[in-house]
Structures are given as C-alpha cells and as structure tokens.
Length: 139
Image 1: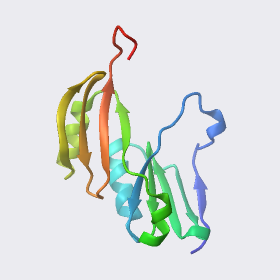
Image 2: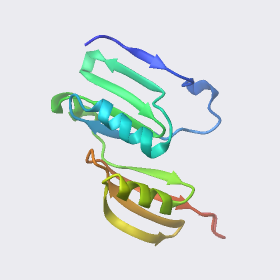
Image 3: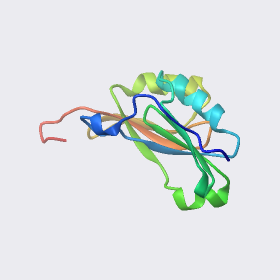
C-alpha cells in the first residue's frame, strides 16, 4: 500500500461541536462503492481518505461516517458495532434509505426523544436514525 493522506477542511481544532463518526467496515476493494453510497445519502463529498499501512486499512470520512476498508484480520481489532445518527427529521432518511436498497430492521417508532428507526445499509452496517426533540424533563 502507498501512504495517501488527503483532507479537505478537516481540521478538528476548529470544531465548535463534536463530529460524530459512525464506523462502517468495508471489504477489500469496496471503499469507492461505499463512499459513493454515503456521498449520495448525505449529500456531501468525502473530506478525508488515507491508508493506515501499518495495520492494512484504508479509511475515508463522508459526513458522519468513517469508512474503514480492510480484510477480516485487519478489521478485527477495530470492529465496534453500530452507531446512532442524530438527524433533524427521520422521515426523509427512511424514504432515502429504502429507495437506496437499505433494509429497515427496526420500524419507525416513537422514542422518548422523538422518533427513530434502525436500518441495515447495503454494506451491512446497522445504524439507528433518531430525531431529538427537547422534552420538559430535559431529554
């Protein structure tokens, strides 16, 4: 692997709020397809991609998603399941994910903070989408 490091407006020292990155694990050779899916879903271009040659990974960030490509041995130490994406409204994501071939594994439901659902993306990752509406008790 060749070391490739590219970043576009990705200086975390200037962030005023945290940027949540949900890990998405990709089989060897699949990062371009995965990046295209997430770019289309989120409406933003990837802003970081690089090889982590020491451990045999290729990484890219697209919006709130951190795509991690590698074989099973390389990925094993980095696997963490699932993540939550806080969104303004869940309904548009439900429609877009369904149209893009995602499987809805947890149907749209009311939750204490608003509404949410869980989807299995075409790459196999399972992500909860939730909207947060303030409640009188501060949730």
